[in-house]
Length: 92
Image (cartoon, rainbow, N blue to C red; front, side):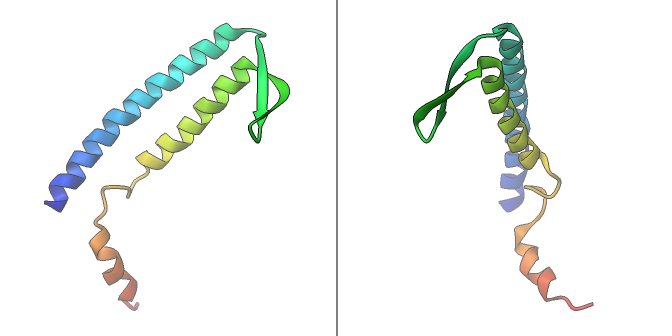
């Protein structure tokens, strides 16, 4: 059961990562098309200095890139977590 769940999770993560990459490409296209459009920046839920809309959109793209990197790292869902305590007790 655990192996089937892990295989299902890996397949679904690959699908989700594909959708996230598509969203990143859309954000990049929108940022390119935004030109010199400004928007109000926010800090602590209060208005701050104006920022370029392109920078705002690309900031979300970078955050998504970090998330997909974390999801696609080797050893994520591919490793068996039940063996971690056993490996930690082995003395070399």
